[in-house]
Image (cartoon, rainbow, N blue to C red; front, side, top):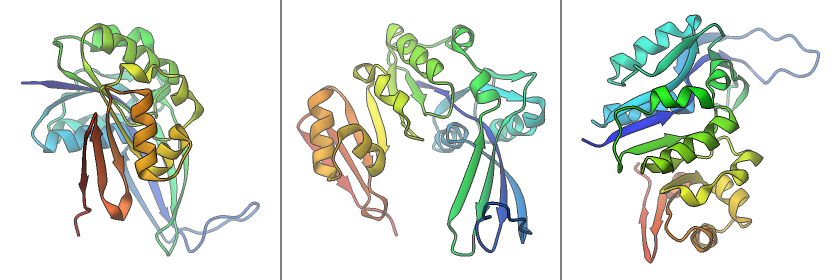
Length: 235
């Protein structure tokens, strides 16, 4: 069975319901408060496991996040490479207003404590053709090192460049097999906003790359070489 290594974030999401976003100097009472497991990396690992694939989540949490490790394991994720360090688990403070809009403050915590030197122990029992999955919520130098190591091992490498930051442009994107991005991330990388042009420009730079461009309500575009497919969004 093909394995998937996901080097990604694990967060504790503190979600507060508010009548409106807090303004500078204002103290506002929340009308609701909940705690969830989160992080783009952890969410993707859970989705992969629920789809029936073998996924190993690689990263770092603090002792305050041990319940997240249990949550991932219960979902079927391999957590043998999820380290527990003397640090706080990454967390997000999320305000949600009455219209459902949100404002988020993110503290990286253990996500940025997982470094290049930790990769060797995590990249075990893999074979050429297995997959490496990355997002942009861990330390930039760790992402770059993971791409290089994955390429050396003959892994297929998928990157979801979210949240989009300047470090993405400095990565060896030519070593990727799959790029998964939304329209704003595509515009940032390609320098244009039209979905077809985003695909065209990225293919010109990286001709061997598969591209998945998500379009919100309009569904998703997939492109690889001369082949393209549009999947409408499900109602």
